[in-house]
Image (cartoon, rainbow, N blue to C red; front, side, top):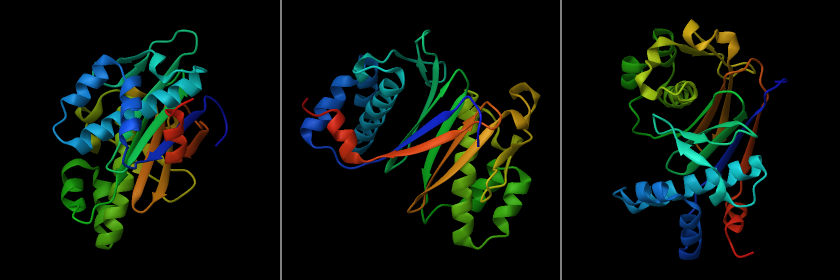
Length: 244
């Protein structure tokens, strides 16, 4: 895809944090972020939250030309979504994390959403699709073998979740009100979005197979936007918060 504005997607595969790294990551979070992390019940969820938000701050600092991730002027929107309070270099961003992956999307001036999901063998893809997906998507899944259906379900879910995050409504927006078409081709796209969110052609959809059953998708409110994906090695991430 060519054209502007471009969106950037960044993915980090998680590894356990040692104590010095965990302390360094906590230090860059805001008081609100640290409080939210502390309220999580399980250690793994707290660590994932801290890594995800530190990674988002690191990525945003790079895009804003800032040296200190702690200084990124992050706020929370009405739905809890991350917002950047920066009038000089307006950026929109989106954050997603699964068990082993964190994904961040950044775009200038325009709405962007990202989602990352991982395949699970016990996933009841057909039942969930019957409840939440458009009829054509449900039919598509029903025509596939169970393993292929679970994989396609994850792909569809990431694409739909990316869109509802981009419009700022989350799951309050019905997933069966629009469809994802063209997965597996060079031009995946949305259908039936509705005039209130622009025409179908006003959106760019990019879908990625991250390997090992993990998938990510980015929705950008711009036609034919160039979406660039980069995967950050864990060691590169950890060094960014290590001793100078």
